[in-house]
Image (cartoon, rainbow, N blue to C red; front, side, top):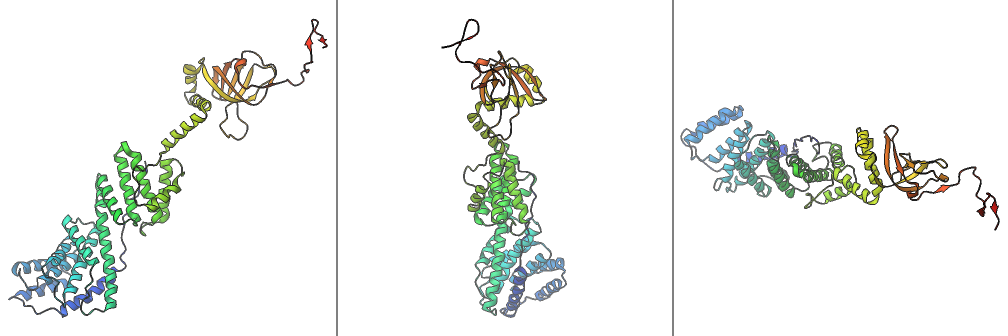
Length: 468
């Protein structure tokens, strides 16, 4: 009903990401410089050194293999937390974002992992940021993340959003700048997590429309100012309209509400598309559905004020509007409506068949029309049936055949009559009806041109005028 929609892939902009990563490298240096005294077990340093060489050479496959060997041989290493962060680096650089997220979450969950007064804050923010970054990169790469990984990412994002521990060696100004950047990344991760179920549901084949509606509705409740969520919820409603044919008008109305909502809040959908495309689409969708733009401004006001359509929200379909207006027209102009029904069938390709089988010689209820033409003392009158407020001269559509000639010339004006159709031509359109002159209501007749005026008095036996 609403037409085919282009699927927008929303790519988020991370202006602060590079700066955040650069600042985190300062934390990393501070962490290594201030690390407390720890001891390598016999032979452990050689494995650790091999891992660092692997990473420096960007041989992340070998780095992961060496890390596995290190973990298997020295499970209780004093450098367990460092090993986890090296895992995170190797997995992230090899684009195994789910495993990078697992390793970061494991580091975050370690007892007293970030309690050291010198290095705790730096290590904590590195682990939290890495979890957030892995989530965002994994989603961008369309990798399948498990529910547990998503849950871990959400927890890390919320924790990063509230992070307020300034690492040692970092100035207040640098920390405030970095904190704003990290919080922006955390908010984006939470937004991504919120819309991800809906995106996945619509991407399935066949699409899971119900899940998409529920997910985007929930996300829009959390982020009512995000127009691209409104747009996607509109797509989900449109999905339901195609699936649930019994309620297509209800789902279609809700879809239009969300498309209009997106257009009035931010038609660029967060800067991802041309604003005119979304505005035009919303307007055209409403016009196609409703049959006109009547009421669209009111809908825009409604959609701007609330992210979701109200309960029992409806928009009249074009068919419903036509039926309502037809009912109103029939109530106000019953005779005209009846004639339009007759005329419509006569003008159809099967009009002659309709006339011969149904209309010919049948008594037609009282009609109303306007006298267009009639000759003096004639037995026929040409009648038009104009529409209300019709401009210009009306065209004759009916010829009335009278049972007796008129006494004068028929004057233009409205009349009513009952009659029996006897003949019909489609081109030019003309229906001929027989009727009784005496039963025509409202007919006015004037004296024929050039006729001698009637003399006063009564007529005598020899035809002379008898004076009073």
